Length: 116
Image 1 (cartoon, rainbow, N blue to C red):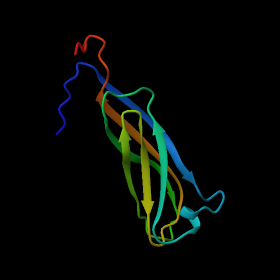
Image 2 (image 1 turned 60 degrees about the vertical axis):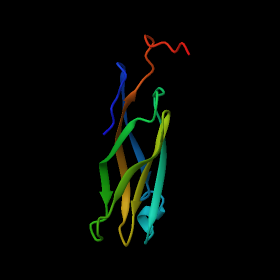
Image 3 (image 1 turned 45 degrees about the vertical axis):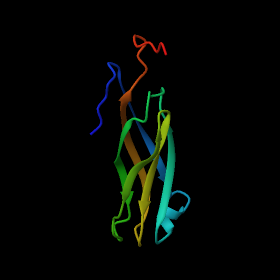
Image 4 (image 1 turned 60 degrees about the horizontal axis):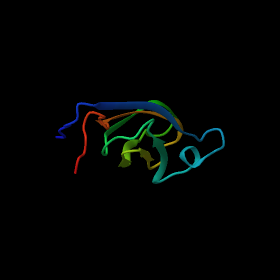
């Protein structure tokens, strides 16, 4: 469990289209086996430390003739941003994915002075 000590809590959120591979026969649509797509997100401001980040699929467009396999996560989380990582495997054909994300963490508090 993470304990947030600050009186100033920051929440940033957004949405990102990770890919649209059906349009150009990209690897998520035409490939097979393990595949991965990473998209970097930059926060609107900078957190005091690494925030807690959640990601979820908000839109997915898949081929009905194959199994639907997906793994989505946040990686490389820093105070200024993170990577959304989407993975699939096998014969899964994915045309498009959109992900929503939320970051929660401490912000700088102007009322807290560092006198050291």
